[in-house]
Amino acid sequence: MSQQEMTVELFGRQTNFEYSETWLGYSILGLRVLVAWVFIQGGLEKILGDFTSVHFLEGVEESNPFFELFQFFAAHPELIDPLVMYGQLLIGLALLLGLAFRFAAAMGGLQMTLFWLASFEAGFMAGLPVEHGFVVTETLVYVVLLFGLGAWGAGRILGLDSRLEEEEFVQNNSWLKYLLG
Image (cartoon, rainbow, N blue to C red; front, side, top):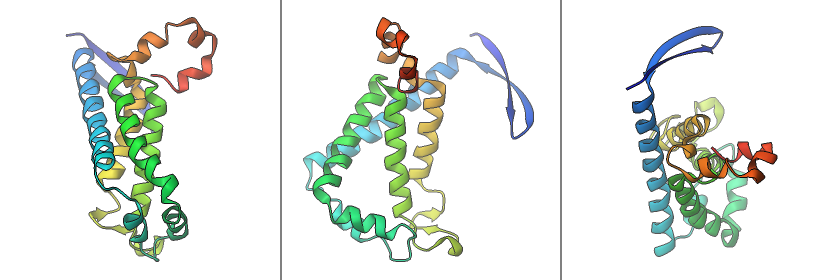
């Protein structure tokens, strides 16, 4: 196993650490597969079940600072329901296959952020208490995890993005690097 040393500056302080390239690769791939499964399972349960977002959205408390946004969403389930159901399935498949990974991670992070914002039970001055914790919930953990996997370029580890990045079209359009990886 190859050991590497990395030096990074975090919060104005230089930090050095060693890591194993092999174990880093396995851990990134494992996290990618697990998060993909969460999205695939969530999407399939909604598609195969009797899903509607209305009950969830109408349950957002009036004290939530984003109450009006979620009431707007609740008024348009014909748009929101397919975005949630099929969005979760497609995000999960893209994460699993390592296909347009950064784009899929960003869309998954956006969806999880909206779920997190919907869980606020009170305004900012009340400390943002939420149903399953005090600010930090599993949805916020998914947001940070997806950000980290995107930053590492997890779609390149046994994923289709590594093959796509070799294509001439992708190499001639450098902006695609922000979607792949």
